[in-house]
Amino acid sequence: MKIAVVIPAYNETKTIADVVQRTLNFIDLVVVVNDCSVDDTAAQLQDSTAVVLNNEQNLGKAAALIKGFEYAMSQGVDAVITLDGDGQHKPEEIPRLIEFAAANPGAIGIAARRKNRSAAPPMRRFANAFADFWISWASGYPIADSQSGFRFYPVVLFESEFEVVSGAQGFVFESKILIEAAKRKIYSHSLPVDTIYRENARASHYRPFNDTAKIVIMVAAQLFRRGMYPIGLLRAIRWLPDPRGYSALESVKKGRPIKKQN
Ligand SMILES: Nc1nc2c(ncn2[C@@H]2O[C@H](COP(=O)(O)OP(=O)(O)OP(=O)(O)O)[C@@H](O)[C@H]2O)c(=O)[nH]1
Ligand SMILES: [Mg+2]
Image (tube, rainbow, N blue to C red; front, side, top):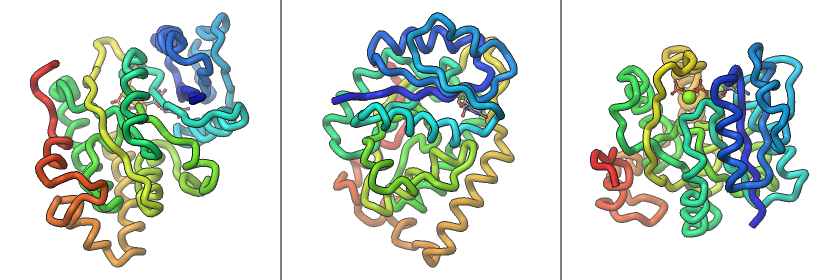
């Protein structure tokens, strides 16, 4: 299976070289989309074998990802893994994610930050839980860590139905693709990974109020269009069976944070 890794990067001078180098240990085709960073992100990648695509203006995370997918598809890949350029995702988990995806063929794999959740700032945890509820409802099944940018996407999502992601801007991308995929009966499964918040990290580009509001507006529009999709809500809260075939108990277990490290 040919896989590319796509990394959106906006002002990641501190971390990007390390993230890319570690990713190249597992995957040869690494595509970084430098979204008109105003720091040294581009210079950090000068000696790297990664493909660097530069945007002339900042277009946001969604547009950067889509540009990366288009490039990856032009190289004939079967799947794309996305991860963030800020060091919050461990490239060393890539083999686990690929194995997990192989066990769930045709599905989206989400590396879900379910371990060590207390590492995330409380506001961010609240925003994530809030987004999870809405996105699970609109997708019609419970989703753990719907905001994770560390994912495995089968390329079929972009080939046959590229509109699956059209119109998604900025941080809405991760949510929109899950909802659109679910409409086409393509579901996601969550692989638990560590929550990593580094000290001295650059300020988050995610604005908890604004970006969460944009996600909620997109989801609310989806729900209105579908008559509030009551079946989706009942499935999301596990009152109706999980369309992925999980038992109710399995479904609860797969959504819970994991306190103990393994
Ligand atoms: N291409 C592009 N990437 C962006 C933009 N904003 C953020 N990113 C990238 O998207 C990824 C996630 O951004 P973060 O600011 O870390 O957001 P987050 O991980 O959801 O939020 P935190 O949990 O606070 O870190 C990083 O790799 C960023 O470089 C943007 O405008 N353009
Ligand atoms: Mg981050």
